[in-house]
Image (cartoon, helix red, strand yellow):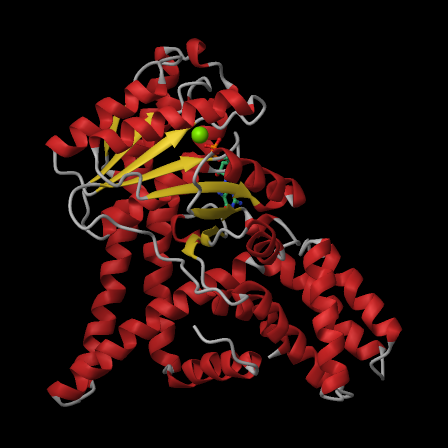
Length: 432
Ligand SMILES: Nc1nc2c(ncn2[C@@H]2O[C@H](COP(=O)(O)OP(=O)(O)O)[C@@H](O)[C@H]2O)c(=O)[nH]1
Ligand SMILES: [Mg+2]
């Protein structure tokens, strides 16, 4: 991607054009259909999360047979609901098909437009997830920015001071903000910028530059050319490793891939069982042993089986006890050794999961993990739960590891491949 000024207008035009191209009527039907489909999937995800939370509260050993039966019933109930929803969704699909038939378009034209529709649809859907997930940040950060422009009538020190404060509050990080302010001041001077509306756009452009910062943006997950792709998940307790694995597994399953989950978090009570349940729900294979087992031995067994069974993607959960850094470093070294021994070139990715709501603490975690293992990408979860979504920019500048996925909520599709343009649009759409 080339760094170019005027990104703000570029993104604005891109999304505006897309909006125009969509037929309102068609979109309505599509949306209805999508909502029904989403509900079906998310019902399961949300239910799972609830069940998990409940379950975490109960000590594992105390799980009586009664509890297990109850859970089974809940699952049966949700199956029924799903069947009903499927009926409904079939009906609306029929409506769409009928409507398409009514419109007499030539065969070629139809094929063409279907192709475009599909692409636009996927994109629009993902943009909406970004918009929704970034609401908190947008409402605090961007509304402050808009009000700043309204309250001032010239670009002066007071304006810059206030802007600096707004950026720091969005958790962009002090160093990042300082270098940003230097660049902005220089640009204002050099280009003699006086128009506050225009300056607002320059600010967005410059924020984008922080992220890109002379580097090529690599947000694609590195997949093995042949044989299983191994993705190792690291990160402290509670950041969202296990649920991210579940969401990713579900995505890979949708693509028709054979997925395996490996329960390498043998430290936390119930972690193995939690992962096993996700494996079942997503139709993934599972390898895990009881609590306290050496994670390297679990991973060894998992990878041997993954090769035997021709698995496409292996997702490995781990326990990230950063409290004992030396121990964790040794454990991860051992894990990496075992993985590399069984599968050449693996792990293909080591994804560090960070909880965006922990702000600067998350940045410290990233720095610490970077020291103890070869982190290749970051998954930034719970962006929907914070008004400080600027952390995406801080991570890139302070840690230098690309953000590959972001979590914008608890539903399956809320895990999105990180895309700086959608991110900027999600944040600044009220200004466009
Ligand atoms: N709102 C929100 N919650 C999330 C997101 N990702 C994970 N969570 C929640 O964070 C909690 C902890 O997740 P878990 O996967 O168990 O963390 P782990 O200890 O790292 O494995 C769960 O309740 C998840 O549903 C996200 O993107 N948004
Ligand atoms: Mg976990």
